[in-house]
Structures are given as C-alpha cells and as structure tokens.
Amino acid sequence: MPPPSPAPRVAAIERWLDTRGHAATRVEPLTGDISLRRYFRAWLADGGSAVVAYYPLKLRPVCRRFRVTTALLEDAGVAVPAVLAADCSRGLMLVADSGERTLYEEAPRPWRELAVVYRQAVGFVRRIQELPRDTVGALNPPLDEALLRWELKKSWDLFLAPEGLTGPPALAERLRGGLDALCARLGAEGSLVPCHRDYMPRNLMRCAEGGGLLVLDHQDLRLGPLAYDLASLLNDSLFPPASLESELVAALLPGPDGELAYRGAVVQRTIKAIGNYRDFARRGFDRHLGLVRPTLSRAWRAMPSVPELAPLVDELRSLWQPWLEADLLD
Image (tube, rainbow, N blue to C red; front, side):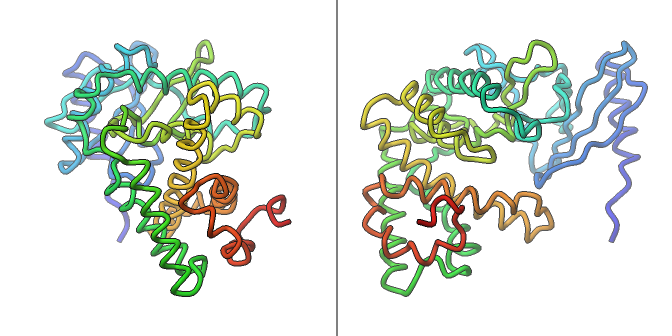
C-alpha cells in the first residue's frame, strides 16, 4: 500500500503557521528516518526558512520533553536549534532551520578540521554532565544496568548469535555473563550523570553561520554512565584517529579510572549500535549497514582493556575475525 499523501498534513501545517505568525509561502516534506516523527521545511513569507516537526499522537510526550530539554540545554550553554513555536497538544513544533547535513553527512573531511568540532562537542558533554541531576532524572528512565542490558539483547538476537560470534554454548554463556557484568559496572546506582543518550555525529550539526556546533535529538536526556556520551561521540558513525581519541578522553575523563570507564562504555555502545543497524535494515532502512564492520572493530579494540571481557578475547578472535577491519587481523 502506498504511503498516504502528505498534502493534507502540509495544508494543516500551513494553517497552523498562519495562526502562529509564521506565514509560509511553501511547505515540503523532508526525508525522514526510522522515527515516527515527520519533518517539513517551511519557506516563510519573511524570506527565511524553518523546520516543522510533526509528532503523532503516541509521541506527544516526546514533543513536551523536547521543549523542556531545549530550555535546559540553552541555559547550560549547549547550542541547540531554537524552538520558534510549539503546540504539543497537536504535535507540532517549529524550529530554526539548521540545514540539511549532520556532521556525519558532511564527511569525509580532514580530521585536522573535525578535531576543532570534536573538542567543542566534548565541551558540551561536560556542560551536559553539570545539569541538575534531579531535574534530568525526572525526564526519562535512567540508562542503568537494566536498560544497558536490554539494549544489548537486540544485538545478541540480530547479530552476535545469528553470525556465530558467540561461539559454542559454554563460550556464549561466558560472553553473556561478561556483558552483563559490564552493564552492572557501567550502570551502577549512584554513579550516573546527566547524558544525552545518543550523542553521535548523526545528531550533531554545524551552524550555517560561524561553524559552531548544534546538538540535535536531545529529548532522551537522562541519567547514564559517566563515559557514555563520550563513547558515543568517538565510536558511532565517525571514527577519530587514536591520537585525537586519546586527547579527548584525557580531557574529559583523566586518569586510569576514566580510561576504564571509557573503554567499557565503548564496548557496550558499539555492540548496541550494531543491533540497531540490523534492526533498521530489517525494517527497510539499510543505509547504516556499512557501519557494522568499523563499529564492531571499535568494540574489539576496546575489549582487551575491559576486565569483564578481556579473558575471552583469545577465544573470540577467530570467530570475530571475518567482521574486523584489516588492521586488526594480525
């Protein structure tokens, strides 16, 4: 069955914009992602443009959270697209138009250029972590041991087990136990801090003017592991060279404890991301499948430094080898 025509939704958006003092000369649907949200670009009568987000009924609470997290991040000095108008009871929000390409979609760019952006992104992580803990904790369930383990179930069922990467039953049991223990360490109660939860190049965008950084999709802000946002930034979609990675880890999480927290978060986050890529593909959204190999390779690089999983590296090597990048095969 073909998708419904966007024309009725466009007409409703045009009427809503008129009532909010943002008359549009044209409204066009934008290509969406796996989310149920829908986006439209509105060319406004004053000559500018803005983006309209439409939240279906079941996502109206997300719309409301987005308004709250926008205000929180703005107050903390984290740059986000400005909300120009919103009516979450109708699922409509008008935000400043930040352009069409995320940091990931700008690639490839020389890392000497991207390093400047990544340093700013790490500065934003620090500001996010300094948000009021109680306020952030009330927004969404914490990314604690239970949620971290749940995230990995999809990866186990859709990638690790089907591809034979868990090995025979005895090894598979030890691997699952190691991952569970890792999630317990990362998600320990009392150690969680405010985090974005999906802080990656696909949710970062450079401003059209001035080249500064904007943070997108922040409505899932919650308490989570100390190193989670940094692990996401440095190991999801774009993969900085080791020298830049080491610099940024040391800047945010200095010392052996910080390195230990980071390497563990890398393993959890990368394996979780692979499960998402496989899930997206089975739902008809396969453009991220090319990221599976480099993402798994980031997990493999980190595993020898993760005490819960390091004892399994030698036994897993031959199983994982076909999925690893060439420089890791020796």
